[in-house]
Image (cartoon, rainbow, N blue to C red; front, side):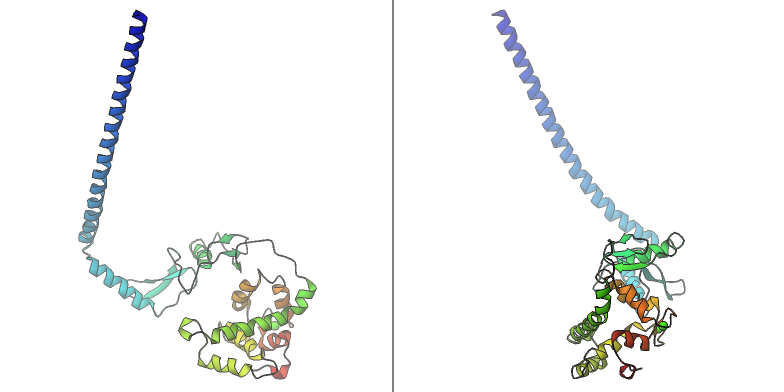
Length: 279
Ligand SMILES: [Ca+2]
Ligand SMILES: [Ca+2]
């Protein structure tokens, strides 16, 4: 009996102790939650007062900051910076391009992963060029190779190389027709280009004008009836992941081996006679 009483007493003590611990735990949790709510309120007020402090220290008001941002937008609207660079305003109020602090995705520059010539995948073309701008020495010689993540490239099949011009002609024709249906402000063709596109439909070789259109679209730096590697890069980078024969085809077009594709070389390797090439 004495043993049983002792056992019940011990059980009771343990139960009380557990209940007490449970109560303490609940109180602790309640107190912690209360502290958290207070801390959050304090943080919110601190952030707000900090902002006010920053504005008062620098003598800025929110309206002034907004005005400054609008001023920068105005001055930079006339300056187009290369990929990876952004427009800034110097002390004299003049806009200039320098390495972007970060890449921002927009309709004109949607983020598409790219592969560099060092076989490194970057989240976007902008990020590759931004890093080249920030670390010119480390990334010297590294360029955009093609759009899409780096992958094992297939070898160029000789049959695919023979059929390459036909695929290109069809592609240029389809791209031009697609752009003719879009408004100019949405990246579509301008009026002159639309007229060219309409005229191309009645020709024996409807792809002749699209071939010229594509050439003159790339021949921009400088416009000299010759395409350099740099001018060909946007087309090459787009084609290469799908068309392993791209480099072999471009090299084959350069018949005088001067590392430039002239309008004559371009037309001939795409299947035009010299008479059909306009320049
Ligand atoms: Ca050129
Ligand atoms: Ca050449």
